[in-house]
Image (cartoon, rainbow, N blue to C red; front, side, top):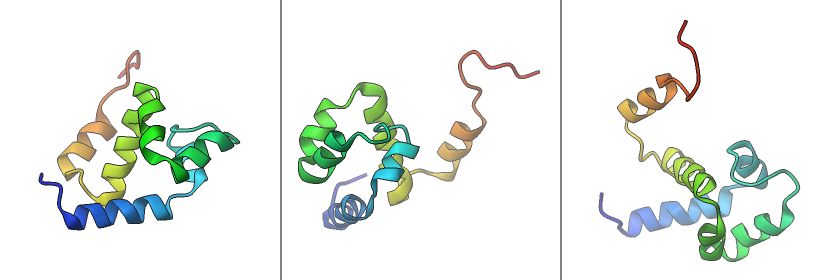
Length: 89
């Protein structure tokens, strides 16, 4: 994939149209964490840099899903992959 002007515009729409509840639901920030919410809105680069790796991965997943960058195969693999420690019985 090449990062182009259209992707940049779609990312800007994502940033402008994402609300706190979406980040909470995705496990990126905790409910009521107004400091991180402010940083997401006002200083996105620092927000991303300071996120722990697991939460940065969740943010990347959210962006990929919202911008439609995931293929159907990738989504299916994630939905049906057993979680660590789960039982298939």
